[in-house]
Amino acid sequence: MSENSIITDTADISLLYPTDAAREHSLNRRCRDALSEYTAEQLELYRLIDVKNSPVGEFFTDDRDVLLYRQETFRDILAFPELSELLKGLIPLLEDIVELRRMSHENSASAESYLYSITEVELYTSIISMMKETLIPLKDKVSGRAFGNLAKAVDILTESEYYKNINRQLEDLTSRVREVKSVTIGVNLDSRLKAESAGVLSVNNDKFKSGQLIDRVLRLDFKQGDMTCIAPLVPFRRDQSENQQLALTYALSSALSEVYKSSIRSWKKVIRSYVLENTDFLIKLLPEIEFVTKAAETLTDLVSHGCPLCYPEIVAPNELKFSARGLCNPVVSMKLEGEVVPNDFTFDENGMIYILTGPNRGGKSVITCAVGIAFAMAGLGLPVCAESCKVSPADAIFTHFPQGSEDTIDKGRLGEECARLEGVLDLVTSHSLVLLDESFSSTGAYEGSVIAGEVICGFAAVGCRAIFSTHLHELASRTDELNARCAEAGGVRIDNLVAEVDGSKRSFKIVRKSPDGKSYAADIAGKYGLSFDKIREKIKGGRA
Image 1: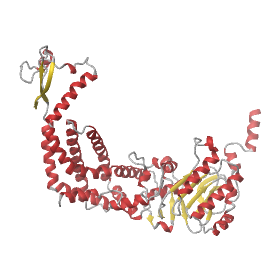
Image 2: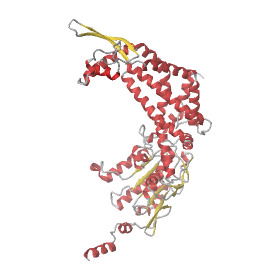
Image 3: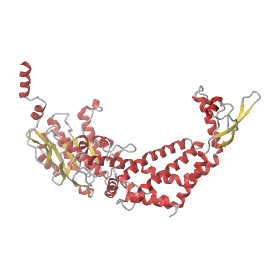
Image 4: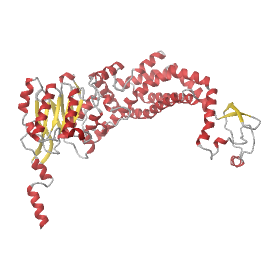
C-alpha cells in the first residue's frame, strides 16, 4: 500500500460517522439549534456527558445509518474496557499536539519550532504505538466498524516502510538534538573591552562546568579544561531582572536558529509531507474521543446505579414512533440512592401531544425530562435508560421550562415566555420533540389555559411530538374541544397523562387517562401544614 493510500484510509476514520460523506450529510441536514446548549442544560445532559472540546449538541443527529454505526462503537467500548482506557490515555497527548502546533506557528522560524516539530512526531509515534498495543489484539474481536477500521489502519500504518523510516529519522534527529548540552560563544571586544559583536563558535555534547572554588570542591574536580568557565555571564546572575536574563536567551535562540536552519528546512519538509497529514486525522478525532469516553463512563455509572440500558430500535424519522417500556430518568437515577420508578411511555396516532397533569412533586417534570433525555441519547447514538425502546429520531429537541428573571424586566415573565415560544415555533417541524413544563404559570389559570390551548393547537398543526406538563387542570379537561379544532387543520391528536396519587401518597407512576378534576391544592397545603385543620391544631398548641 502506498503512502498516500495510508493517509487516505486514516483521514476517513471516525468513531461516530461511517464515512466523511456521512458526516457532512448529517451536519448539513441538522437544523439550527437541534440540541442547543440551553436545551442540554435544561435536560441536565452535562451531568451525563460533560464534554469540553465541543458542545454535546454538535454530536446530535437523526441520520439512522450514523446512529446504528455509533451503537456499534458503544457496544465495543462497553464490551472491552481497555478501549476506553486507551482513548482516555490519548486525550492529553492529542491536546499536547494541538498546543505544540500553536506554539510552532507563533515561532515558525526559530529553533524552538524545530524542537516542537520533533516533539510532535514523538507524540505521534507514541500514540500510534499505544493504539497498536491495544487495538491489534482486539482486531478480530470487536464487532463495530469504527474500532475495526481503526485497528486495520494502525496495523497497515505501523507495518509500512515509510512509518519505519520516519521512526529511524526521528531517532537520528532526536539524538542529535538531545545530545546538545552547550554552545561555545565568541565575543569580539573593542578597545574599551565592550562587546562589539558575538556569535556561536561551536555546539557541544558536554556541559560547561563552573570554575568557582566551592563548586569545584563539591565536584571533587580541581582540573581546569576547555569546558571550565573562568567567569559567568552577567545576565544569569540571580540579582538580574527577568528582562536582563531573557536578553541572552533570545540572543542564543536566534543564533541557534541560524545553526539549525538547514536542519529545520529539511525537517519541515518531512513534517509537511507526512506528519501533519497523519496527525490531522487524530486531531479530528479528539472531540469524538472525548465524547465517547465521557459517555462510556456515564453508561458504566448508570449500570452500577441499577438503571436499565437498551439500544433503541431506530426506525425512519417520518414514522414518528416512540415507545419505551420501563423508561427511567438517568439524571434522577444518578442522584438517588434508592430505585427510580420506571414508566412506560408511547407517542402514537391517538396521542402525539400530551397534556400532563398531577400533584406537585408527583413526577411530572421527571418523566418530561426522561422522555427528552431518551430522545437526546438516542440521537447521540447512545443506549437509552429503558428496558426496551423504539424511536423515530427527532430532528430537534426544544424545551420551554421555567427560567430566571434576566429577560423579564422589559417584557415581564409572561412576555418572556411568549417570546421564547415564538423562537421555538420558528424552528419546529413535524419531526421535532417539544417539552413544556409549567408554561404560562406566571398568569392566571384562565388566561394561562387559553394561551396554552392556542399553543398546543399550533404544535398539533405542525404535527410534532410534545409534552405539556402543567397545573392548568382546566386545560386538560378541554382535550376533546382542542382535538375537534385541530382535526379541521389536519393536526395530530392530543391526549392526557396523569401523575397518579395513591390516597395522599405519590406513586410516581404516569398513566394515560383523563384527569379527575382535582387540583391537588388541598394535598399540597396539607403536606406543608397549611390545611385549615393543621393550622387550627398549631394555633391551639401555641396558645396552650
